[in-house]
Length: 288
Image 1 (cartoon, rainbow, N blue to C red):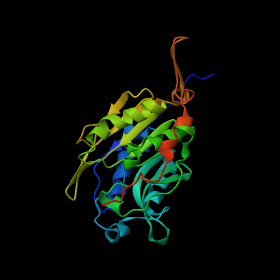
Image 2 (cartoon, one colour):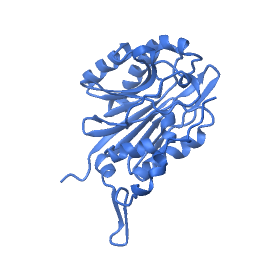
Image 3 (tube, rainbow, N blue to C red):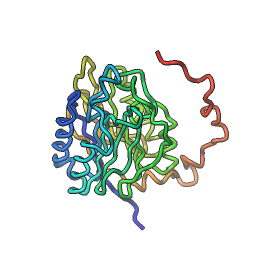
Image 4 (cartoon, rainbow, N blue to C red):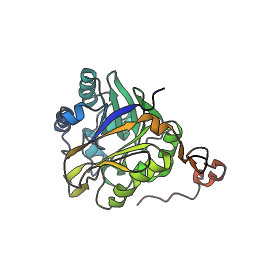
């Protein structure tokens, strides 16, 4: 029996041109030609990669959103079909009845695999005008690789990562647009989410300036023990690359000293005591 299933994954930390979908899609296709990306089973780009993030109204943002399928997804579908590769990236999605979504699309050799719409919305940038995805957190597949999709602020909350891990995720993806103030998030949350769920975690942020906002980079890939496998600086455009072992993520029983030190991430849980985290009354405040 095989003792490992290894897949190479990559995250592209890059700048984004506000309101210029054509240039941003061209930039993704350019990055995908880099040998570090070409060798990867899965390549991940930041949140709102197609459009940029710092919009000041729904009316301003709407023309820079696209339907799914649409021009951006068509371009990436063509690439993935030709190169038998999986690509995930963030974009603004034009939904039904004028709803605007902050979405992450996973595309593979056979086309669109999954579309995740951001659930947790901060009072920041275009998220002030988007609609919560309002959907369960569900797995998607990149061949045998089991993925859980989230976007930026979703990662602040431990529950989505736990739900996806319980569903069988090997790797959690977090395309993000971290601004100043999110530095501690960048330094600690990816490692914590990986460790507590015994999964791999890839956070892919952007860099550069956009309409007065600076983005802080620090993209990171973490292993199932919460160790950092690869990380980027706060300012550099670069590609993070790492190899992940799917079977390591699926083994929740960690035998460190046989018979003396054994940790079982799932068996050792006590869900019967976790009910209060599901309470919805009196735990939300109105937005400013």
